Length: 182
Image 1: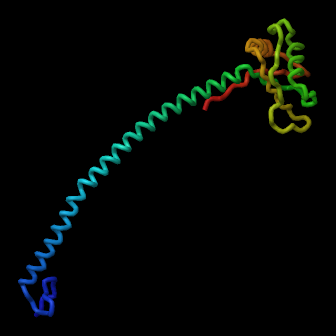
Image 2 (image 1 turned 45 degrees about the vertical axis):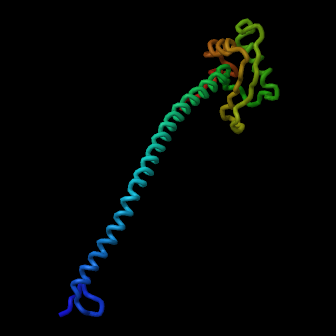
Image 3 (image 1 turned 60 degrees about the horizontal axis):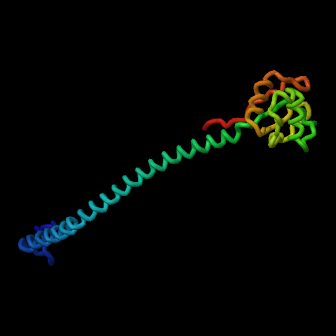
């Protein structure tokens, strides 16, 4: 009966010495591989440690950048709100109104409604235009007029006096244009 296991000698003859030799060779091969792994493990540990340090530094940078982004976003929101501080939105003015000289029209409208004595020496409208929506069909509510006054006190006076003002048979609501928070 022949041994069919891994210790079977070449040529079909059983040789116990060669089996021990094969086992010794295998042990030497495994020992060499193990020495190679032992040499590579510290390198891998050092590489992993470097990566962990880099990740930690980058996460700290990311946290700082996130804080800076929040600060900049708050500053941006504040600047936008300040730039809109003198804005008014006037509604219920018919679309048929001549809009080529909207600033002059709004100045006349406000002084007609509230009188010149309600405002500072000279009421100055920096900008005035209809909202950028499409022109509404007949019978639909007109687009609001967005207005920017030069003087904040004039805007405040207009808001205070204009709460119940009516023109063309409907209430002309005025409110400042503000930014909604995110």
